[in-house]
Length: 128
Image 1 (tube, rainbow, N blue to C red):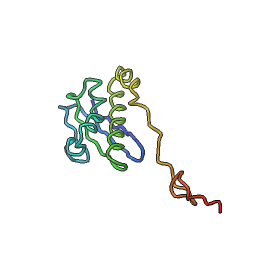
Image 2: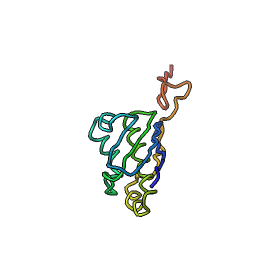
Image 3: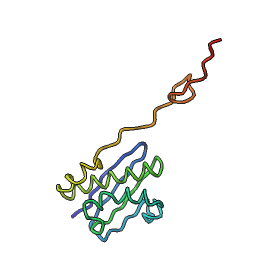
Image 4: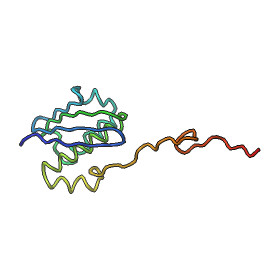
C-alpha cells in the first residue's frame, strides 16, 4: 500500500495526514503525538477513527497541522484520519459516517461588524 494523503478542516485549523502501513506510531508536526496533544480528551478525539475501525496498531500516521486552537486542530486531524480510513477500506465508511466523523463542521467565527462592539453585541442605546 502506498501513502494515503488526506486533508481535514475545522474552524481555521487545517490538518494534512499521511497514512502508511506500520506499527501505530503517530507524529504531529515532527513531535510525539502525546506531547502535541497533552490532554486525554484531545488524544481520544485524534484516536477515535483508528480505534473505531480497529486499526490503531496497523498504520503509522504523520500529521502536519496549523491554524486554530488545540481543539480545532484535534478535530481537523480526526476528520483527515477518518477520510484516510475510508480510502483504506470501504467497510470503514459505514462505521465512521453514522458517528459524524466524515462531516465537515461548517461553524466558523462570525465577523465583527462596524458600529458594534463585537459580532452581535451593540453599543449601549440611549433614548435621551
